Length: 478
Image (cartoon, rainbow, N blue to C red):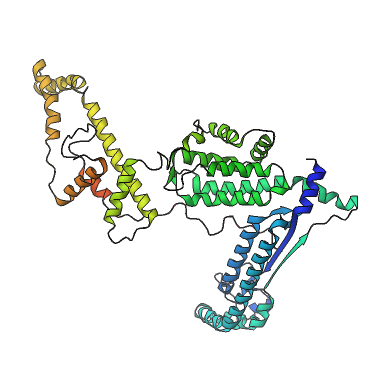
């Protein structure tokens, strides 16, 4: 497709969107007469030459609405021609208009609420000021605005319009240039969102929940909605779909699947890589091959396609984790834990039990060659104590007796230990107090480890995200 054809596509399918919101600052500039009866300036009240004339918290609901509008507009549009002008899809016109009308209703509702409580809130705020700075209360009261005046300082407006060239070459030149690079601008905005996603959801993580996918899905939806801006945009959305489609729908995401998501986000962080990969797919390369080749740069050599045949993924939930989940649920007799809490606790439980078994196996493996290297040490100890060399038979007897003493060390026979043994037997199917055919299970596992596994710890959600997908930006507002 030629540049001119692409320009015409952008113009025909694009929708210009302008949104503006004005919020009262609740401040007024200081004047010389404000200092006529005082020699001290209260730094906790006055800052940067501004005098507060109202409670700034009155504007909090309006600021929250402004953030909601910004996030929505950023999620369905791209900067175009001017920082305050956004380009959306004409195909989404009905949805955009409906959403902006909802924002307009919310704004009107906030105005009515402010009008009803303004006077009461202002008087309560003045009483707080009077306790610390009684002299300034009179000055502030003289500068305060009425409810009607404050309402006039608040405004919200929006506008959608169809892009139309003038037909005059000199006047349309800027429009043609901007339509030619709007795809690159879109990739830059996605890269910015991906960088934030990496920092908040993936950097340094060994496992994530499915909430971490929300931001990736939001970027994909934005690319699909604005695919008319550049031919290379839709292939990138296809790559995202290909990767997301092979992630297990349940359980924590880790191992190969987490690596795939991390490499995807790293790809999305680079606008130049996005453009190159998009062009490669246009030239005939399969999206799966593009992503698998990119994955190899991060050591993910196994193609995801071969892993997708697993129902839930061996790395997401194996037999030990399933048994651990059953144990956690059995303890939650009142059913207060959510599925997510059960998943997190069972994963930790399984990991701890696997670690115990592995450590026990390693300990038993390390015991076999120990008698030979310990013999010289025993000789030195004997020589130091008696001044004479010990005979070989006595040296061999000492390392053999040491393990026996450790194995016969008494373990407290308490109810908690019995419960710990039951837990271990439920997970592994083996009684930890015997050697029922499992060489990896120690005869005397540490009691405190099982007690730790038996606790109810509060879990924090590392991937808690805002209700809307993107970082706030100021570019769309006057």
